[in-house]
Image (cartoon, rainbow, N blue to C red; front, side, top):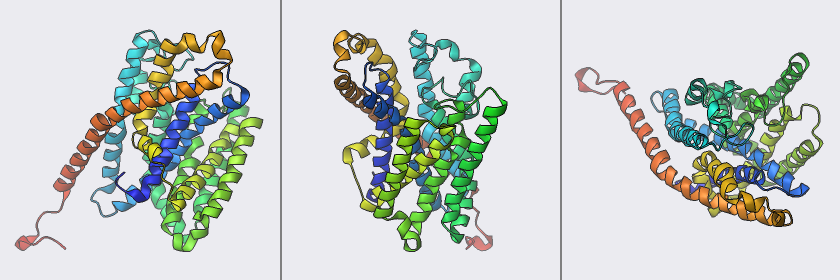
Length: 388
């Protein structure tokens, strides 16, 4: 963590990936009680916590490079070198597992037949966020990467829109998120009336960028509000953040348990408010959970690779134990032990891929940016003087 002031962002990323691993671990342990099942299920919200943290840090990085030549082009080059190499490795890894016959229709890992040339190419181009048939079946959890990349595509425009809105009032950014959420709910209602498709938890319409966009916008709003704390400090104070977290967290629990009409259409918006409040709270209190932050540093690798353990190795080697008669009375204990095992093994593997893949390609992308910025720099003026 190069910047201790932002260590809380790694805390949030660490919490996010631990939540995601929990939901997938719970799917492998039969016989869990209602409370344990509900807690595991809520782990799916870790993805939206990733989205909030991502939007926040993208704003910080983009603004810090305000004087950089070709800033927008450099932004996209950094993003490609940040996410593509490991994602392509994940495609190969999960295809190899499927070749072993470990995939199954409707299971966590897709059968080898799902790896058609079209589906693979769509994922290589990160267009799976727009293709229901290639959205989440080439790399487990790949839907969130496709949705994130779709956000990258509109990020520069949203950044300047949000920055301009804040000059008038911080409420304008919040209203933008609410407007996006409201139009999404209306669109989902129309879709449910006139087509056979309807938004459900964890289907394509739930994963689609427009359903998740309010989460990203709220993450951006937090960044701009914190940037102008002198004027809008009450919006980011610990007391306000704690109250907002309690209210939105309670709303999430109610939505999750009651499942009202079209609840997956506004669930992400409420998640966005909850996780923005959590981010504000961590930032204000300078919370640093060092073990969690270390996990946060390698969270991208952990997110992509934990399925190897949760959906392949654990079912293969521990399946008989988890399904045994003895296990039925000790499901919660087995959940804790299995979760610790998956987290530990994933962290070891992720630490390796972070050092030898992620960091190396990030540096390579940085070198490429320096090269084309140098070539595009203005030449010497007449008389040998550099232009001012």
